[in-house]
Image (cartoon, rainbow, N blue to C red):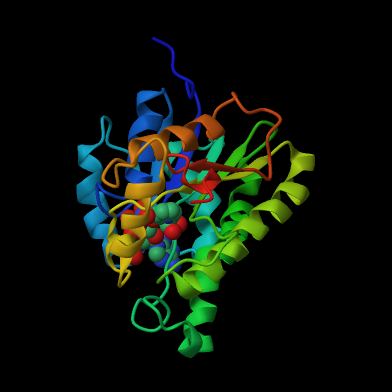
Length: 260
Ligand code: NAP
């Protein structure tokens, strides 16, 4: 049976546990015929190497801290070492975010210190540019970069400075779409509803957000099911959206479209 990602090489950056959205993306991408490469950083790399054994096929895992200039510079060689000397990338998934939950989230917006805000913006927004530029030498016409956002067009309870970082990510995706369009590379985001991942559980008061989805999403919302989000990411990685870039696709049960 043929899949929508047959023959494509996809890097999924940001897989720690099997609850990670990146894990669900890697799984569905493999099921759709892709050769997947996974990355993570620091101490969690050890966990990632264990967790990826649960995927249909065991992918190569590479180390990538998206704030580390040396890691970024070494990325093309790391991809070639993993996939072969002539390897190219057809798709890159940015499934990465970090903001200090103690100081930036959970209702402390007016106190958020700049050093922590700067880190959140670098890891969660600027890094989309860093990752795309690092992968650019391996990508060509038809390439696709996909990131994950949480709708930054409005202010939310508890999301605070991460909401500001996501607004930066959404804008960053549009500027990247502008500057990489000439290479035939598309840049899009999937805006997911609340999902119970490691990052989400670290947000104080995350349950307040989840509760809103229970009553307002017209299709309903399962906050333990990463697959709908993964499917949308894989659709954007595929050739099914050849003329779509700078777009944000909502996978939120329809929540964003409802007034009340
Ligand atoms: P997750 O499993 O915790 O994934 C986040 C990943 O980012 C982790 O693998 C984390 O590694 C990695 N990361 C953090 N700093 C990094 C750095 N400097 N370099 C490289 N990787 C780094 O949580 P997730 O919910 O799946 O998050 C994936 C994406 O989806 C994020 O952009 C998130 O904002 C977005 N999103 C999530 C939800 C939700 O409700 N969960 C909704 C909408 C959008 P460590 O584990 O080592 O920190």
